Image (cartoon, rainbow, N blue to C red; front, side, top):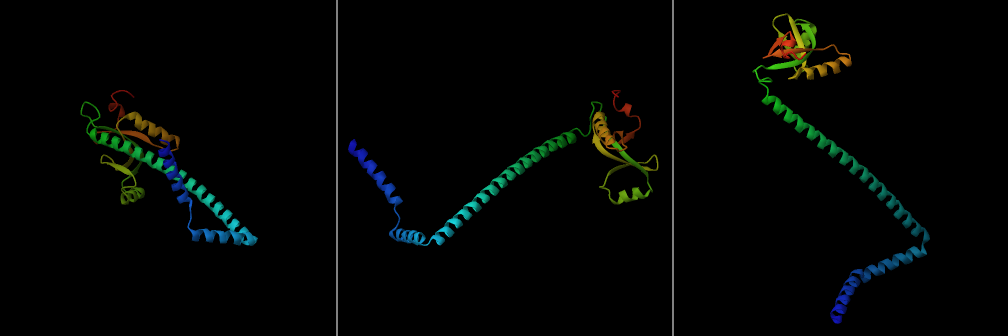
Length: 196
């Protein structure tokens, strides 16, 4: 047993020693460099200075790499959060599409919007907005000579009221309007089943 253990230790020692060995040519080259530096102090100092400079550069690069890695992690978290928000919105869109035809058991299609402006059909602003239909959403009420511009699409009155309050607090003059089956209803109380 002792002989096996000794043989094993010898093999491990020999393997470590052989890996630590350098070629004779490398050894001569290194010895020559050591002698050159020993005799030429300015060269040795320049070498040490260049090593220190390179170490400083390396430290700066490591610091920059750490900062970049941190920023990358932040951006990845932001992307993950945005993707989660997009998924949540897609679920809401799908739910709205599913419920689009009815928001009460009675088959009524009730929607609330915020009216932000109303202009005569021939006004200059009206013609400007006609050139850019994606600028705002608008509804034309054929019963009068007005184009009424609205934003939002709410199934519940109180959601529309929250946006109205937010915009009013910011100084906008807006109000909630209601639609049933695509037609504007002047008396919102009829659409809210008396919970106003």
